[in-house]
Amino acid sequence: MSSLLVDVQSRIAAATLQADRALEAVRLVAVSKTKPADEIRTVLIEGQRLFGENRVQEAEAKWPELRAEFPDAKVHLIGPLQTNKVKQAVALFDVIETVDRPKLARALATEMQRSDRYLDCLVQINVGEEDQKAGIAPGEADQFIALCRNELKLPVIGLMCIPPADEEPAPYFALLAKIAARNDLAEISMGMSSDFEVAIQFGATMVRVGTAIFGTRS
Ligand SMILES: *Cc1c(COP(=O)(O)O)cnc(C)c1O
Image (cartoon, rainbow, N blue to C red; front, top):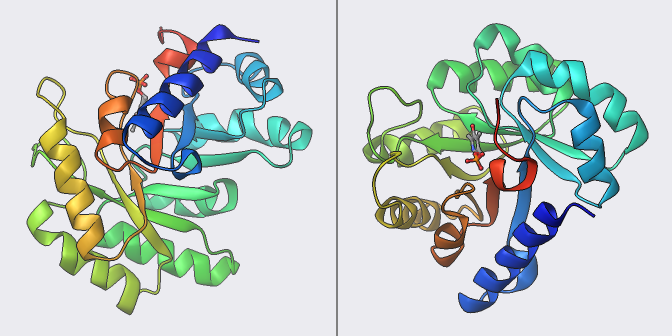
């Protein structure tokens, strides 16, 4: 057993209990970006089934083989998606966490209809309104979610965010949870290696943890 995965699992359980939430209310997305298939296989053998990758091409190179061995593994796209890779992404992933602009939402809706494969989607919110970050501004979130759901019929199940790197994340996690609640969205993807316990306190239903499971990325 990799002590790292077990350690993260027990920290998630402790934070969940402390927040007075049910243990099954928080799922761990193991972020395997940049990690070779062998290292991912080790974590699959330990029982982890939910993973996050941030590049279409990299995921395509690693996951068909891993999925053949572990048919119940699920992979979320957690990185930016270019519209010219939408077809590949819809064929490959189980959940798209990074619906971050109208053009992408439209392309995803068209491809899901064409391929008759409907993936659950999360809308990425740029909670810190940072220029360099993708995502919908908090003030435009309700309108964008309505566009995705009502006009495009995308299966939107929740929201995701990456708060500003060198600030206290709590107010940003609270903001994401508030936008999710008022839009009646159940899934909240927030929290990474450095702050997943805080995210759980603020209502995260999925935490995306890479370094704390796989070690530092080169
Ligand atoms: C890399 C990445 C993570 C995981 O980050 P760690 O600090 O290694 O846990 C989570 N979410 C997204 C969107 C990422 O790109």
